[in-house]
Image (cartoon, rainbow, N blue to C red; front, side):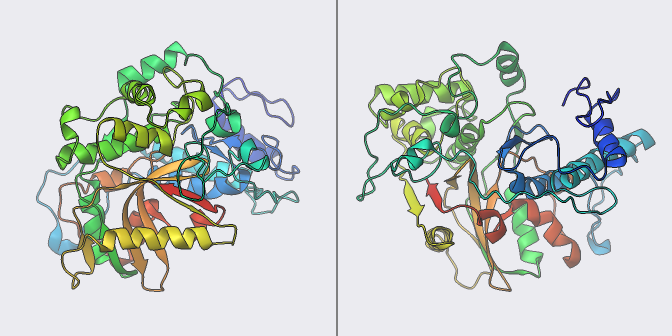
Length: 435
């Protein structure tokens, strides 16, 4: 929301931005019948500006991750492990207020969109929508599609079906018919690139070793960078995941690393690689489906990622999971991921298994992630461990990079939560693809 957006109930115009408007609605219209900013079943943009398009019933969980992302407090080491480094100056009162304001604003969004007022009242209106975002019209027409945009249509042998159907907004996003992204976004991507953190996986490894809720876990090769989107960049998740996979190819000097320099390609370079792969006849139906991606904000996914790597003679394959029975696709996906990592272990005695395997590209309807590990908890529940391009590593995680980690058992789950994706996250989806 911009500063000029008025209150949808009374027309009040905030002078200090969206936070003032949120508080105004919560305080002056606590009994309003549902959120005026969306209608039931309609997808909405993340109010935190990460660019994700969400269904209303997905928003609360999504904002919880943003809330964890916004937590800046540096974790307290246990006394015997206190590092001998210069103490950082205490943040000013204004800085503390700004950080608190950020978290409070996220909580206000969560309350507003979940139908709760600041007084703890439940709104009489609730969303019963279970529609998967970016549901494709091709599915409605009876054409099999293994996942949302970026997924490939496959026949019974797993081969991608030939299709010259031009896809629309439900698959390619709201800029499906865009010829050229706006100059301000070009400048943003060229000037700022992306948010990158190296060394996060060794931190997660140490946290898992100390986690009382972890029975065992597997991790991929540690040299994979967590690449996050810029604020306002939009739906470039597919590109960010390609960058994460490429960071490991370069660092681990895997086959094909000679095609890259010392860092992964930019979004614009990836678009060139996709178009070049189509020219070579690799997943070339993507050009007909998208109308071309060069210089646009159209969503990409598994076929485009696969095309990039195959065009550079980097071996990869796609596996699809789709089953109408509730929970079956997720079960098969988790079994496949655990089997993949189990095949890379060197010692069956370890509790946290460190492998040399590359990370995995995961596509589900509406979003893609990079899988960096698998965790089985003491209660039997399983989680995929992921780097999500929609979220940044919190300051408390970044402050642990390169250090010996020693945390109180009661605090470890809060450190790991942003990287865990379990049954709650996958409950809505019945189709996935991995690369």
